[in-house]
Amino acid sequence: MTATSVSSLRRHTEQAYAEMAELGVGALWRHLGNLFPAEPATRAVPFHWSYGALRPYMLHFADVLSIEEAQRRVLMLVNPGLQAESATVTGLYAGIQVILPGEQAQAHRHAANAFRFIIEGSGAYTTVAGERVHMHPGDLLLTPGWQWHDHYHEGDGPMMWLDGLDFPIVNALDAQFFELHGETAQQSSVPDGLSSAQFIHGRLNPTWIRERTVSSPIGNYPWAETERAFAAIAEDAAGSAVDGIQLEYTNPWTGGPVMPTMACRIQRLVPGFHGAPRRHTAGTILHVVRGEGTTVVDGQEIYWGEKDVLVVPSWATYQHINASRSADAVLFAYSNEPVVRALGLYRDELR
Ligand code: 1HN
Image (cartoon, rainbow, N blue to C red):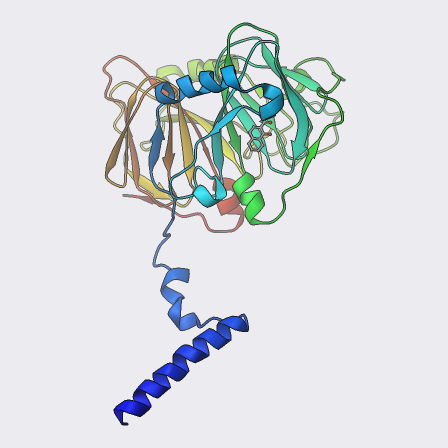
């Protein structure tokens, strides 16, 4: 072929790609590598948020921004690789919320599932579907999708908690709905803390409740129960070589995860714990309940202290270390594992 005909063919080809794009057509051969990476190529990066660094901003906005203006006064923990969807790890979100004494966070509901893990303060409660659920540090409170919820603080001092939501998954599926309640706060329609009283024992479920909800019916997994569970197994637990003495909060109907999209776990890393490295296809967010330590994520050392938050993206190799000689480290962890498993995509590998 002559040089002219080669370049005219190339021009034709460029023209063809441009014309096809107008027709809503792409050429697979130009995208195969991106669409089918040899292994997960996540935009999420390993990241760490220091609670000490965030807290002054929380207090600043508690000072200058009313709860009425904000609706929810929350600092979003946005992964630098996931800014477009305001996600913390693929499919999941974390934020830190603050509410002051006397404040009332407007009742609303959304399709996304949510939970709160209480960090500090006392005297606040959230009302979920008519049930007042009181908050104490270390409690895990559930707000399954589409249940009305509002928060009220009748104690002293700021109340802060970690919000976990699955809205990036819900939004990716174009299945999000949101509605404001007609009143600022719901009426209380059942005794405070009823769901927890009825179900927290797990092995003794009330037989008169027939509706098997897809999410756990428990409004609060109190810290006192979590401590009791750890104390009951004490030093006898073999634990996992990767995650130490890890317990999962479960749905009493199924024994499975508390919500269809999020698995919530709590783990104790004993003094000197040096975890085995592992990777899996469930993006994970961790919050430090107490202690300090190091998590090595794909070779990057993340040092964490009390109340911090960190992220382990899908398929990143992670390893937890508690170098203290005397102090436990306790981590609360949540991940999108139930979604990944439901779709048959869960893979797990010791390194
Ligand atoms: C929400 O409803 C709450 O109810 C917290 O406290 C954080 C983040 C995004 C969307 C809804 C809450 C939220 C949220």
